[in-house]
Length: 491
Ligand code: BES
Ligand code: MN
Ligand code: ZN
Image 1 (cartoon, protein in one colour):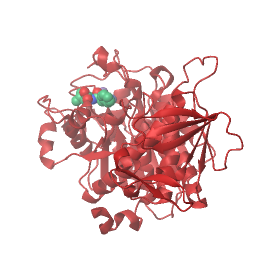
Image 2 (spheres, helix red, strand yellow):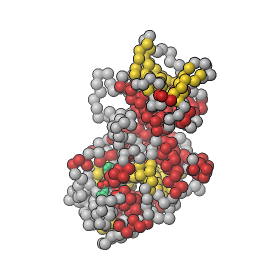
Image 3 (cartoon, protein in one colour):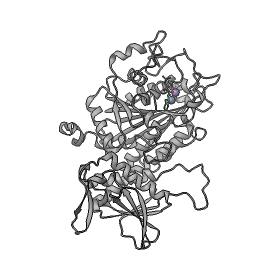
Image 4 (cartoon, protein in one colour):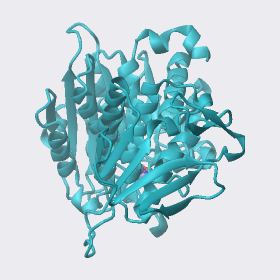
């Protein structure tokens, strides 16, 4: 993590100054021994010099800027500075103030604070450093910041820290991130915080009749775990927000073994679980006055003589039976029990987060997660927070009629379309989950599209730590008039 300071640097040696500029290309210029990175802004043509209070000329952008471009611009600054091996950079906060961004200085501070570290991250745990080490930015000096904005910048920095830890969990190879290790990492993540972590092993899960989770994990030599994290930071009587995260530490597909090309990256199939762990850690660090529960069914989906089979019928914890038509649709099977368990808490709202379907990526591309809920207000809230945080979500339907295609012939529900259709796969994942959570405010986030970064995002390849920022902001703002006030929803 880089250090953010607000002092004017004593020495300009080794310092890279950054200037948002109307030059038509990004360039680094050395003048009188001072190195400056001129970052071209997309809005170059629309920039018109205005006089600020000090009377000096600085460019201001009258239109065209938006949050999406702003996220990218902050990250580009870091990526370019890293590419020339700079370790210390300095810029003026005012450089990132754009008229059309329509945000307060504090919001801008939080965005900059989080995007700096977000872009600086790279997963180098398994790499041998070269002679001069890895190139990371160590310090960022920001001028022109008032006390309130300073606080916001540091808050953004803390958010990014948890996002980056989420990325590290997800990036870790499958052999080093088993269900047992994931459970240990959950405990480590909240060390010193008032969060209670309970880990159920297979024996305890049997006692709870969590046969859906146990069935999926049975093909693996690694013991399945059910991770429970409880943070009671809110009023005693307040019902908790329950976050459920898919924790498949490696998804080989089971007996419906994945083709070679689809196996790589399946160590990240616990990304939803990782996001839940670090969202709760962040909420506790921020001392949010909220009650939050995190549930992570952690299993490895392997092919062996002990694996569950296509055609098996499992009696889930809820009592409903699941007819397994495809062992590679394992995420929804383990989440069935986790969603059943979630309702023990009489939750205010349940949100599950899962790298559930490749079909979500077919539908939406790789820039946003799919969100499913019957609750319009919940959907709008998430869409809005998505725009604010950069963890974008797009709503897809879960109409009742989709239930027709998951009616079982042996069991109650099939885990994939009962006619093996290629269409609407993400929706069938969602409608399956819905069978295990009715009469409860619930949303399902299929984050498969956001499991890894895509080219052009100015982010390291690998995990992106989605949707920690979205979940955190959702919890932070939950029920505050800010989001649940109808007028705000409209805008
Ligand atoms: N973990 C995968 C989905 C996935 C694929 C996430 C690629 C991220 C990137 C999930 O368990 C899976 O295998 N889904 C199947 C469902 C199918 C069998 C109905 C899929 O998407 O092919
Ligand atoms: Mn699978
Ligand atoms: Zn999976």
